[in-house]
Length: 309
Image (cartoon, rainbow, N blue to C red; front, side, top):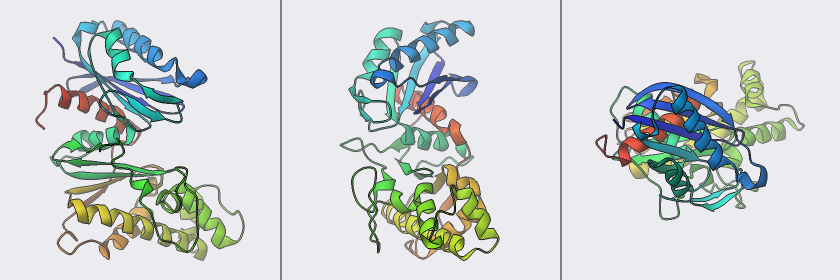
């Protein structure tokens, strides 16, 4: 019976993998991401690891319902258009894996995969419309409408971190544009803001900023206030457009808990459309680094018609 699913989340340093029996996680493991020669060995590394794990567990490859793969970059149904950290461009990843393992393979952006994971296993509520935002080194996200991830014509839907801001200074984003949300709302942006307000390089990470704010440091408190205001304006633009059931916040900065989420919720209140205000569920992501492997597995279930859309 084809009831086994492999979920794969490709990162810049490690590849997280998981084996599911239908919707039940039964094993997970990690292999290194070998990016030498533009990541040319990664597809074969995946194939070999899957073969090995299935054999270790006493399963046949014929039992695979499918393999879902999350990739850090824009992806369409068949091809990784670009994954800068891996060195990939226009890689037909789906075909490579399918030809070797003779099973259904789905590919999607890693942030979109994390959004699907949170939709599937992150909440007890059976929501179908969520906005998922990750606030970490960068700012990313995924948008789910009627249970389906939005990918867009250019495989770039959900690029929340590249919403443009109007600010009193100019910061160049990694994408090449100026003053994207990521420049101010990410951990990197917070650190830059804090050090500017302090007048010297005072902090190296956001944990230090939150700790200083708790002690009453004015620059730290202002940094948090400015950061959540930028995030709230950008998030409200999406929320007021889509009117989702839930906003889920993940990423490293969210680990600060109420010290970050409480002021963010307060800032959102002033920007949300009145009919949405107080009706929107806002929560911290629950699956952490496992969101991607859950989401890629769920994507297989969706694409094979094993779950209702």
